[in-house]
Each structure stands twice: as structure tokens, then as C-alpha cells.
Amino acid sequence: MNSSSIFFILSFIFVSQVNCNKFWWIESAVNFIKCPLGDCCNDYYIPQNITGLRKELDNNLFGQHIAQDAVISALAAHIAIENPPKALAMSFHGLAGTGKNFVARIITNNFFMKGSLSRHFQVYTGRIEFSLQDQINSYKELLVEKIAESLLKCPKSLFVFDEVDLMIPGLLDVLVPFLDHGPVRVPFKGTKQSVLTNKAIFIFLSNTGSHEIAKALVDLRSQGKSREETRLEDFESLIAVGAFNEKGGLHRSDTISTSLIDHYVPFLPLEKPHIRQCIKAAFRLREIDPSEEHIEEAMSHVTFGDKPYDLYAKNGCKRVDQKVASIVYKITKSNELKSHKEL
Ligand SMILES: Nc1ncnc2c1ncn2[C@@H]1O[C@H](COP(=O)(O)OP(=O)(O)OP(=O)(O)O)[C@@H](O)[C@H]1O
Ligand SMILES: [Mg+2]
Image (cartoon, rainbow, N blue to C red; front, side, top):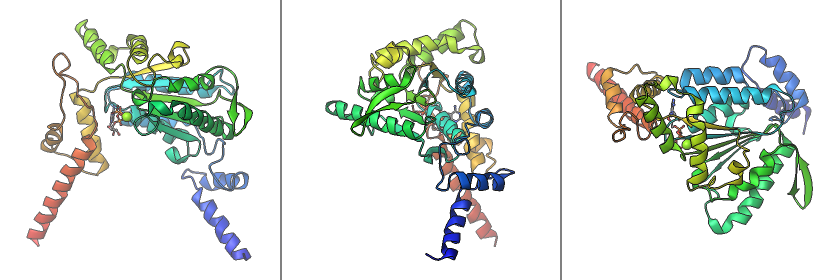
């Protein structure tokens, strides 16, 4: 390889690591020297940007004041000290389409420069992985190995377990040593390795407890409390009980009984005004200022629960984006047709 092709390759790697802030070129140059292949376990690639997270949640998350506060304070407290006592474990609960994955994605994007493409981020999905009861032991071994491998490379790894309710009960018990205080010695590639766990973050997502959340909200309302006045304490313990008793990955799990989940975060069922906000955001994303008629058309696809849950959308903002996309398609087509006729 001659010197000009080496220069070309190095320039390509340098440019591919560029981060678009004011001093990107100084940061990128320093980083390039320290980490020529990219995505290292350092502050540049893992900025853990709480300010960005707060801003993005403020601007884009609707109707989830409790989850928003709980998530920001838990993460800020966890990263505020050099050596937290244990890994942070949060469990998000709520009906479909209320923003659990959405928030997990926003966290990932603000914590890792490469977002969900970071090699220090792992996601496991219940429906796809870990659903066969007779495979439980091999799943457990695989999980321990993958988590240990990631933590050995980078203690600040983030693990998201999605659709926990569809995982086999008992599987997540293997996480207990990772969530507990102190380093853990685990079998890894034929040897025992000591793994630092205290800087890691684990997030569990599930629908368990969503009925309890909706019922508690209805009860609190009937006692005269507005949605905005409800607090984490109104929901936290009943979610833990629900998650422990309902079928799924946390059913009678040691993870819960040993109190290793630090925060149970309720995602409240969404109401009409929140769905409207989701609809407007989906139009904005496509640079369209929607008319009331367009908003109502998107709204007509949303179904609400039966009394006393009739205020709550059954599937939250799920599929709203797809409905808006097809309305926008129709608008664009008819505009094209109009301008064609005018010509
Ligand atoms: N509270 C919210 N604020 C803003 N947008 C939301 C909210 N909830 C959902 N959305 C929108 O709806 C989409 C689907 O939501 P999301 O995947 O987060 O639901 P979920 O809670 O994970 O549901 P499920 O339990 O079915 O997995 C999101 O990508 C986002 O665009
Ligand atoms: Mg989800």
C-alpha cells in the first residue's frame, strides 16, 4: 500500500468520526489519535448527555410527566458519581404505544454518539429471542456471556430488554449478579472473569401492570386528582406487584424479589389531546402543516377503551405515524394533480 492510499484511508476514518458541534474538528482530531477505529469506551463516544436527553424529552414526549421526571433523575443520579454502588435498573410499564421504546431510543441516542448502532448498546426482544421454554438453560448461558463480554469491553454499556412479558419466566434471574452491588465473577470463554457492573444501565420494557396503572389513574381522577397531579408513588408499588404476579419474564422473578430493580416507571395511558400532539408531530416531521380535517382523519383510526377507560387510547400513539404518512401521501398526490391541471 502506498503512502497516498494510507493517507486516503486515514482521512476517511477521520471524516467518518466527525461530530457536528462547534469544535468538532479539535474533538475529532484528538479522538482520532486516541481511538483510530472509533466507538471506543470513552466520553466522546459515550457522552451520557443529560441536557440533550432532557431537551429531547421536553420537546417530543407527550403526557408522561412521571416517566419523564423519573427517567431523567435516575439517569442523572447514576452518572453523577464516578463509582455508583450498583448498576442502574429501570423497568418501564404501560399500555401499547405510550412511549416506552420511544424513551429508550431517546436515551440511547443521547448516551451514545452512535445511538443504537453503538457497540456498547444491546437490545433483547422477548418475542424474537428467549421464547422457548426448553431452551432456557442455553439462553441463560448466552445472556451471561454476551452481557459479560460487553461489560468487559465497556462498563458503561446499556442493555434494553424489550417485551419482557413475552420472555420465559425465570430467564432474567441470571441478571441478578449483574444488577447487584459489587463486581461479579462469571464464566466467560472457559475461564472465570471479574466483571465491573456498577456503571451499567439495564432497562426493561413490558405491558405488565398496565391495567393496574389505568385503574389507579381512573381512581385518582374520581378522587379529584388531575392527571398532572399524579406522582410516581401513586403507581410504583402496584406496578412491582403486577410485574411480579403477571405472566412473563419478571413472573415471580428473583430480580424483583431481591429488590434489584431501582425504579418502576409508569407510562400513563394516552388521552385525546396527547394523540393529537403525536399526530401533529408526525405531520411536522413531513413538513406539513395539517388542517383540522387532516388531524381528524388521523384521529378517526384511534380506538378508545370502554367505560371507565373511555378517555384512554387503547394503543396510544402506535401506528399514528403510519396513518399520517398515508394522509400526507394523499395530500401530495392531490397537490401534484392540481398543479398538473393548472399547467
Ligand atoms: N408519549 C408519547 N409521546 C410522543 N410520542 C409517542 C408517545 N408514545 C408513543 N409515541 C409515538 O408512538 C410510537 C410507538 O410508541 P412506542 O414504540 O414507544 O410504544 P411502546 O410503549 O413501546 O408500546 P408497546 O408496549 O406496544 O411496545 C413512537 O415511536 C412514537 O412516535
Ligand atoms: Mg415497545
